[in-house]
Every structure is written in C-alpha cells, then in structure tokens.
Image (cartoon, rainbow, N blue to C red; front, side, top):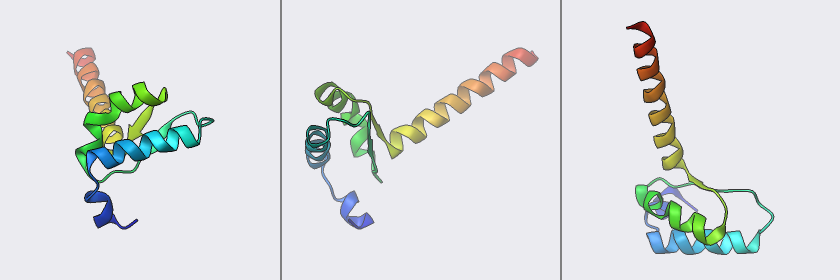
Length: 81
C-alpha cells in the first residue's frame, strides 16, 4: 500500500482491518498500526477492548515518547532546584 493510500483510509476501515487481523492471528501478543494520520489515536482503546490485545500506532508511540521525555525533563528540573 502506498503512503497516499494509507492517508485516505477512514477510521472505520482501520478499525475493521485491525479487528480482522486480530481474529485471523490470535497468537500475536500485540498489534502495531502503521499510520501516517491521527485517525487511529481515537480508536485505540476501543480496538484494544475488542481484540483483547495492546494496540500501538506510530502516532501513539510518538506521543508517548514526547510525554515520557517531558516527564523526565520535569523530574530533572525538580532534582536540580
């Protein structure tokens, strides 16, 4: 699938693809969704509930990294004050 095709995917299509993949491959521990849009972020919790698996998208991983970096920065500031 080309990048422009991924961007055009609707949240409903992404949701359907993830749930279908989880049912087809019940042995996996988690599901990673390569997504160039924020469309998956609002679906993650619902997809995790339906599949029973952790779901990570490229955008949610980046958001998590930024939040962790900010938290570490705050902790360092507190130690140095």
